[in-house]
Length: 386
Image (tube, rainbow, N blue to C red; front, side, top):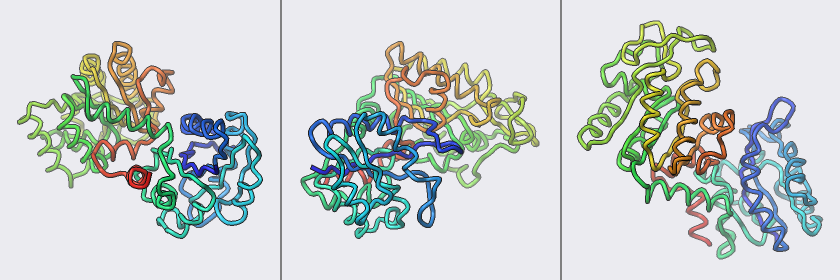
């Protein structure tokens, strides 16, 4: 059979179009190999980056073709389009034991618009559909959700999506306690629903990164020029009141490393509740790190998403790195840990700890929406039409 496989090959490339992190490709290899070994022809669909207005050399999937071919040790064909006769010919000419990689679906506006006609054109390239792209499951795009409707009774999840759902369900539905959730990142507006959900599920919630300053200001702290969102002060205040009422611990930073400008340089540590007017917090401080690690080391279940500071600046990376070490250490003592989000995963990679946590989630946005309890269109479609 010709098996249309939605994968997530949205990997970072440098200025020379070299892959900087192969994780998302590597994680889908078992699904692709299974199809090949069973005599099928995998026809791979993916996006890369956020191209606008058609073809863009920077986002062509041809840049990953050689790595994919080498990893699979199979003959492959790269099709410079994902629909029409160009793609059809590539599928027809694919040799036995080979695969086809289609060009970036986002070069067509019908992908992100969720155009049924574009989904139909994609469906004509396959006899069966497999969704193995958890990282895009929260998008109602043509290749992630709509295409499944054309494969009623002939679609399923791939091995990667299966692993993602099992890992998250273990944390969310049957966690061994204590369950420690760690959240970071820039804005509370992007994670408010996740905080609310985890407040009900977890025993302790550790909050770092820029999002912590809205909570600190809502609690009466002076945060200087630190990133915050005044529109969410009442929400943060309500969450803190709810946690106190229900006996749940929401732990905020007690000290932060600050600087007057948003740049990479040596910082000065202040109390997180008394930052001078002309300074901004850019990482959690030593006392906060110690406080967070004391909680993490006692955990039996850990969910971590988001950096503790401005991770792209080496001078403000320590908090995130120490949390990564703490999660890995707790895992070695028997905790079950799930980590997601680009900077969190980057910290694990930088320290060589990626294989020392229980599971690394390939989809940051999809992970957060699943935790929040939202319906993911890419998941729903398979469950409905399988």
